[in-house]
Length: 93
Image (tube, rainbow, N blue to C red; front, top):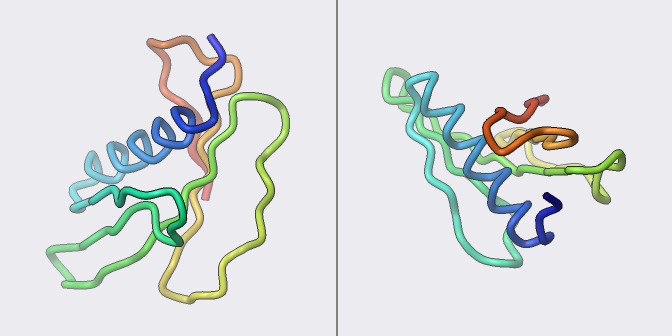
């Protein structure tokens, strides 16, 4: 089933946050339509915080990506192409 763009973006952000939490970091998804940070991540062991921007696709093409100009931020790609509802997406950073 092809998701609407808004739902696809949210699915990618929550999937990435879930994967980050599985690695024992604290991940908080931010809400809104015009934001530069999709997920705030906190490492309780080091006390460091990182901002993450998520790009998600379900077809062959990645959405327009302008890059990020911040050394404290990361970009995560979430690929739902050819995935069933029961399958996890592919993550790339």
